[in-house]
Image (tube, rainbow, N blue to C red; front, side, top):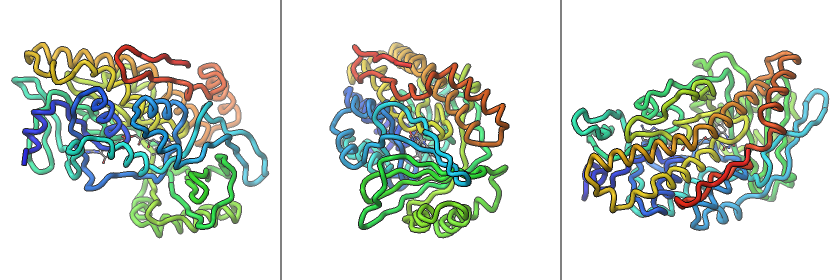
Length: 419
Ligand SMILES: Cc1cc2nc3c(=O)[nH]c(=O)nc-3n(C[C@H](O)[C@H](O)[C@H](O)COP(=O)(O)OP(=O)(O)OC[C@H]3O[C@@H](n4cnc5c(N)ncnc54)[C@H](O)[C@@H]3O)c2cc1C
């Protein structure tokens, strides 16, 4: 059997991380005739967090990816038409601002699996952890070390290895920051149907929020965010055991409506996940390179943001399409160019990708950051008013982030951006 080393030398493009961004990027490259190798550290497909809200821009990116993936996912998820925020104590209701256009909640495993299933066999290598990344001092090619001691020297590396990315370290990005919050996510299945409306409902009380939205007629995705100062040993212990996560969540929701506590109490144990929240601050992205030579980052590795705008996954899909388009000239033919010329063309294509994405991810990151300040609920009414004014000035009605079209996979179409 061909070793990873030989395969990577042959294929040329190595993608580190087989999450949403890594798999979508491999598929975008494949659709443009470029083979790649995806190295994923988990032994099986990984879909932490049970479900994900995909907004209109994410659906557009999936449509550009083609292969019927978007329609398959649409069949498995209900369209969400609006969002409502309810103050538990007063019963006061207001609208939750959702991005305009199509919005659905899909099971992460459905998304990950539909991407992985479309890849040519042998593209995805599970159980393959990259432990370090450097550049060969003589050839300047990337040098990846794997957990099993193997070294591989691809022509190009794309780091889609999430918020704790080692590729981001290698291109010189600052480490991500941690928010003083944690989030529990889960799924609840109602065998005879949940009977809920197609709405996102968020219940809020004193620094605690419980959101829920239907995926289909039987399953509901829910998330609970709570304020905390530090991720302590207590949270670490809770996070390890789904039974304790469930019990702790139900207890935390003491004063919440019975029906919602019951939803959490009945949640599917394997779906439960408790995490802290990491992000790259907008000002950390301003001068960030996002690449070094033929090594670049995409998805959360590039622009991890809090979940307050529910845009991280959709933005990762956009990255995949734009990368696929920028690299579309790298067919098998010019991977055979003389080394020096090929290296400079690869670097030029990666530079184009970074230039195309920088403004978009900075805007998303800034809007998410401001939304996060509102959700954290620790600011005074005046500060909140100032934040809302800022959001209004910078982002209009605040729903435009989902109008973005990253453009198609074809090199003749750069797309357009409606901001
Ligand atoms: C609480 C919460 C709620 C969210 N809700 C939403 C939402 O509703 N909508 C939305 O759009 N976004 C949401 N997001 C953001 C979204 O989950 C991310 O933006 C998205 O998963 C990013 O995909 P990715 O592929 O870049 O990274 P990841 O999904 O983190 O995938 C990275 C992959 O790389 C692998 N990996 C890591 N290191 C290595 C290594 N050294 N070697 C090999 N493999 C490696 C990991 O195992 C993983 O499979 C949410 C995030 C959080 C935390």
